[in-house]
Figure (cartoon, helix red, strand yellow):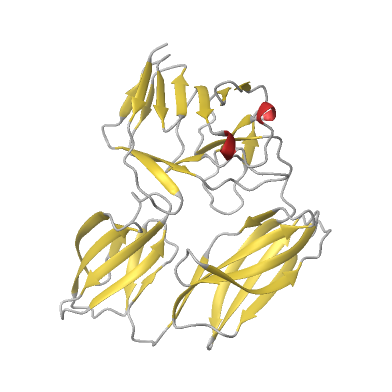
Length: 328
């Protein structure tokens, strides 16, 4: 069997250690040839092209019950039209409580970052001598690939999670359904998306299949951008995190970036209309990713960035310099 090994550029960004980027020309893998990206091996059953896409490896397990996935998760920036054999080589230290002999390839075609729908395959082959799990995926168009044992649904299905300001307070509102074995929601806040502090708890209804609404008020909000997330815990101590929301608390005339988290374009607010702005975007590791200039009202294109934490530095015409942290 022919194999092709692709070398990654190492980027220590938010628990991710490597990533591979295929540009507009792309990379074509011939039928029957096996290509390996950081121990994720793909052997297509027909010619397979990866173009204008990024693949990133993370050590953060996907949520699930009773254990979630292994601590080796691969994410494409957009779904890939792949049919063939997918294999993952892993370390025993990455099993995350899963029984090695029960491992199955896991994938998702869902692009949402909140409550994505994961599918655990059946019939995967596990080679415990070399710690490798394999299975055939047929036209699945995966965006996430990992491995796990049998996963049962999480105790809470989060329908929405919003954070709004009311004067000098932040009000968190969320709705949940299908509360099977839910215990509580822990509310966490961060100023840098890396260090989180618990600021309160709300008990879950615990056993309900109808929509339940919850609210929490943070009355002690620091100046600057505040990030919020929910830690959803069930009665057997399994848990999962919600998507991150952000809120700015500062003087009305202070420049800030919006929306944050961002999808395609990041905008500057409270910048003089006549100003041109020099911008630089960095990975959290300090690596420069892009630089240039925009006019007031124009957005910074972020579509090509993989999910993660970034730093935007700006210089206004008057020499004022500002630094912002944003999430993709």
